Length: 81
Image 1 (cartoon, one colour):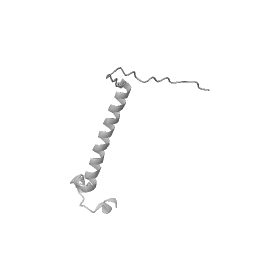
Image 2 (cartoon, helix red, strand yellow; image 1 turned 180 degrees about the horizontal axis):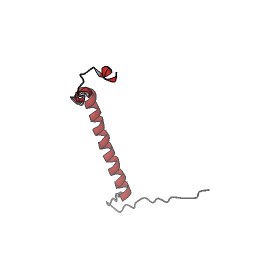
Image 3 (cartoon, rainbow, N blue to C red; image 1 turned 90 degrees about the vertical axis):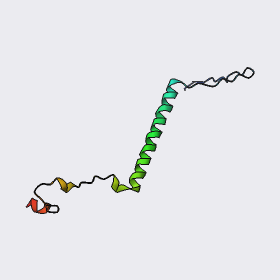
Image 4 (cartoon, helix red, strand yellow; image 1 turned 90 degrees about the horizontal axis):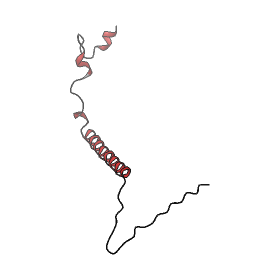
C-alpha cells in the first residue's frame, strides 16, 4: 500500500501580517504557457470568423488556368487527346 501523507500547516497569522503563498517557477511557467495558448486560440477564432464572414477576400485573385500557356481556359480535355 502507498503510505504517503502530506502534512500541510496553515500559515501562522501574527497580528495584521498576512503571508501570501508565492508561485513556484514551474507554476509561473505553466501559467505563462496557458496564457500564450489562450491568446493563440483567440487569434485563431478571430481569423476563422473573418474567413466565415468574407470567404472570398482570402482567395488569390488568379486562378489555376492563368499559368497555362498555349491553351485557352476550358480546353484541358483537348490537350489530353
